[in-house]
Image 1 (spheres, rainbow, N blue to C red):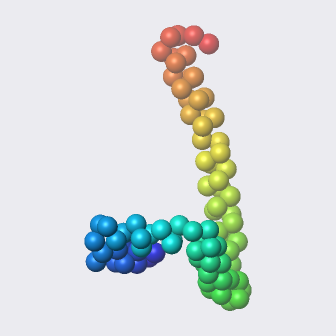
Image 2 (tube, rainbow, N blue to C red; image 1 turned 60 degrees about the horizontal axis):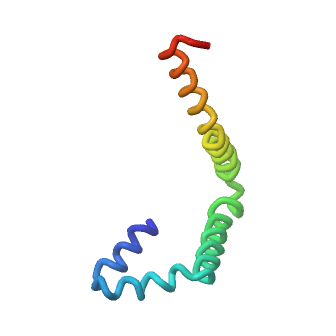
Length: 90
């Protein structure tokens, strides 16, 4: 949704105008305000309505995070296993 809005904003601009349009969006203040607005919207949508969705978000987010943290080790393990199979060792 945000990407669509951003695309629609820059769609009508000329190439030389894009950096001047994007530069204020990269400031620390703009990022803080955007993050605060997103958290306020999340709070209004899920917390104030006593929804169970935040619990799901934490559970699924935790599973995804743990998978991503363990992924490099699993890939090394599989590469080692393939290498051992190819060379008939260990």
